[in-house]
Structure formats: structure tokens, C-alpha cells
Amino acid sequence: MKGIAYLVLLFIGLSACSSESKPESKEDADVKEAEIIVSNSAYEKAYDKALNLWNVSYDRRLIQTAYGNAHVIAAGPKDGEVLVLLHGMNASSTMWYPNIEALSRKYRVYAIDFLLEPGRSEKVGDVETTAKIMNWYSEIFDSLDIEKFALVGASRGGWLALNIALKEKENVTKIALLSPAQTLSWIPPGKDLLSNLIYTAKPKRRNLRKVLKTVSSNVDNIEQDFIDQYYLGTLEAKINKAFIEMTPFDDSELKTINVPVLVLIGDDDFINKERNLGKAREVFSNVETKVVSKAGHFLSMDQSDEVNQLLLDFLR
View 1: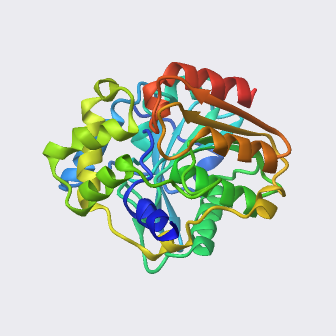
View 2: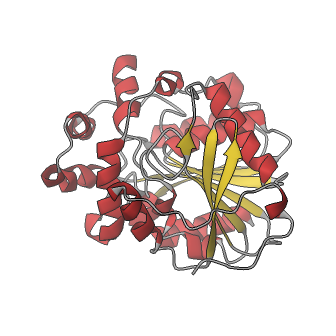
């Protein structure tokens, strides 16, 4: 069972998924503004095209850290409460395109590309331990001069969000988990899991739609530009040692988290089942849970309006 779970995290964790020109006086002090990020890479061109799905004004930044440059997309009022978005595996920050308009109306949103996956962050050296990954995030928060912030994490991003909350207990105010992977329990085996493993072992474009149907209840609702980017990301994705450390949390760890927690899963989600919500109610002292109807693992895309409203209600 555990061996299967490790493979899952190697190969899935999918979640779905006008730049401002004025300088940022406070934030720019410690942040290197990303100039025009140009690349001949097919993936990076697809990323930039998918990012155009963000129907809001945003800034793109490259933050220099000891572990490489962190690519962060910022949107929303600069004096708003801070909300950090952590995407699902191999989906990158572009996956938030159905959610960013609603979330950035009130909140100052920072979406961070995970440096060990396809995206626009750039890893330098060995960063393949959870401790180093958490140090990387801490450097980002320090550079952005962020103190208090809420977290929204999807799939693997949910697992990362809880690790951040355990490390930054004085700073995290709320945590929303969208079908978190390898977080409350091991991912169960099944035919959907097998389809993903087969695809990832040898990704082919003609098989992509079949795989997407295992994680989305409405593949036709996903924007083609995002699908194109995601496919190229699966071709570039690399196995790294950090996956070995991605195992479910001990109950004792989770019980130390006292801030409000929201856990959402889809009713057609093979990563999480309703029993995981029961587990969340056992370990978190202040928790809300809900099963979103007609949604798969990509619930933030499958039912974006409902998920957006649930997130906003929780964050308020």
C-alpha cells in the first residue's frame, strides 16, 4: 500500500488547476521585479499563453533565494489581506485562472510556482528535502515582507500548505485544502490511479483526455491553453527525492494546528473520500468540511463558482 502511495505522488497529485506597470514601493525593496521573461522553451511559451487566462491585472516577479529564483504572480489590492496560493502537482500557478478574479477582488494574492516542478521557478542545487523546501518558502515570505497570511493549497499544494503552517505557526491565519494529496491518508489504489501511472510512465497526447477524465468531472470545461501547458509539463516533469518524504501527517502533528481549516473534496475524487473529511474533523480543532457535487480532483476547475464562494466565505 505504501509503495503504491509513493508512486502516486511521483506521477499524480494533479489538481486543478495587463501587468501592472507602477512600482511597488514596499514590496520592491527586497524583490527583484521580473523583467520581461522571454524563453524559446515550448513549455514556457505555453505557460505564458495559459497565464493570459488570468482575467485580472497582475505582476510577475522573480525572487532571488538561496535555492534559486522563485516565480511569484501577485494580484489584488496591495493593502489587502494576504492570500498565498499553492498549486497542484505539475499544474503550476496558471491553474488558478478560474479562481483568481474572485479571490483577488479583496485579497492580495501571491501564487507561487513550486521549484521542483514544471513552472517558472528555477531550482539551484539540491533542494530535495522538505526542510529545504520550507526554507525556500520562508525566504519568499521574507522577501515579500509578508507576516500574516492565509493559505490555499490544492492537491500536493495542500500537503505543502500544512508543512508551512507547522513551520510558520505564528504567521498563518487560515488554511484551505482543496483535495489535499497524501495528507490525511494514503491515496487508495484503483483503476483511475492505474490509468495515471500508465500515462505518466509514457505520456502521449492521445491518452491525455482519458487521464484528465479520471481527475475532472467536466474535461470540456478546462481551457485548452491550460491543457496544452499541462501536457508539456508532464513531458518535462522529473522524479525527485522530495517525494519520498511526502507521506500523510501524524495525527499528533495535525492536532497542533489551531487556526481555522477548510477541507473540500469532489464527490468524484479518487484521491480523497468522505472518510478523509471525518479524519479532518477528528484532528483539527477548528475545521469546516464539504463534498462538492459534480466535481473530481480538479474541483477548483470543475465547480469554480461554488469553490470560489466557499473559499471567500471561509476566508471572511
